[in-house]
Length: 417
Image 1 (cartoon, rainbow, N blue to C red):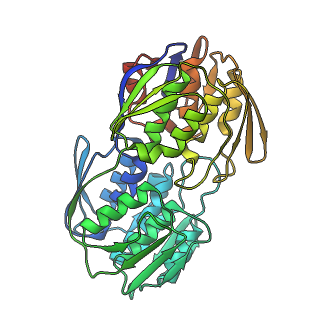
Image 2 (cartoon, rainbow, N blue to C red; image 1 turned 45 degrees about the vertical axis):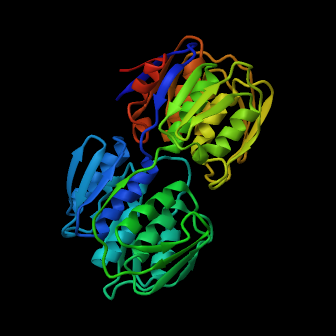
Image 3 (cartoon, rainbow, N blue to C red; image 1 turned 90 degrees about the horizontal axis):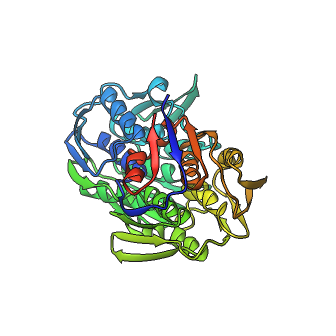
C-alpha cells in the first residue's frame, strides 16, 4: 500500500497547474450513456475514481479510447445496465449512472455506493425523484433496481435538501423523459452547470442551470458532442491553502477564480495575500502571518465542504481560535484526530471543530481516512517539523492526479513509497 513521506518546513514557490474537475468528469462520463453516438471529453483528470467510472462504462457496453486527458466514449448498445459492487465499492459516484441507464435502457441495477467514510450520502433523493418520473424502484441485497418499461415522464420534483449528485442524476434522466421536468431546490454548483453545458451540446433542452430551479424539456434522442471539463476548484483551493500554510509564493494556473470566491474571501480574512493574475491564474502569499477566521460550510456558492479539512490544517498555523462548522456531512472531522497526533489543538463539539492555532506541528505517522482528509494531512506535513509518513494515500489518488509530483515541483519535500 502506497504511502507519502513528507519533510516539512519548506515554503512553496513557483507555478502549479490545476487539472480537470473530478466532480465534473464523473457525471460527464455517465452522460455518455444517453446516446449511441461518440462523445469526446477533454481535460479528464487521470485519477482513480475516473478510471473506475471508465471501467464501469466498458462493462455496461461502451468503447473507451483514452489519449492522455482526452477520452472518447461510445455506447452503441447498453449490454448490461448494472454497476456491480466489486467495481464501484470505492466510488460514491456510481449512483450517477442510475438516471441515464433508466432513461436510455428502461432499467438499471446499481450497487449502493461506497467511497469515503465521511457520513451518510443517501441516494433516497435520487430514488424519490426517479419514482416521480415514473420508474419503479426496489432495494435488495445492497442493490437498487429501477425499471421504467414505458419510459419516463416529466414532472415537478422538489428536493428536500440540496443534492449535487441528485440534481445531476435526475437531470440526466429527465432529458429523455416525455414532457417537461422542473427540478426545484436544485444544486447550483459549477459542476452541475458544466454537465448542463455538455447535455445541451448533445441536444438536450435545459434552462436555469446554476439557479435553484432547472427546467428540462425532454427530447426523443441525444447525439454525440465534444466538451472540455472545467478546472477542479477543489484542487485549486487545496493548492491555494498549500501556498498560504507554507508562507510561500505560489501561482496556481489553469483555474477559474470565481469558483473559489468563498475560499479566497476566507484566506484573505486569515491574512493571506491573494491576487488574480488573469482570468485563470491566482497568486497566493502569506508573508504577514496568519490569523484565525471562522468558517461554516455550505452549498455553492458557500464555503465548500470539500475544502473544510484543508482549511482546518491552515487554522492550526493561525494566531487565535477558529470555529469551523460543518453543515453538509455529519462525520467529516475524522482528520482531526490525525492532525492532533502531529500536535494540533482541535476540540470537536458536535458539528464544530474548535482549532487553537499557532501550534508547531511535528512529523508523525498518520492514516488518511478519506479523500479530502488526505489532502489536509499533506498540507499539515508541509509545515511540520521533521518527517511525516501518511498511510492509505489511495484515498488522495481518488481525486488528485499525482499530487506529490506537482507539490515536489514547487519545492515540497514529498515522495511516494
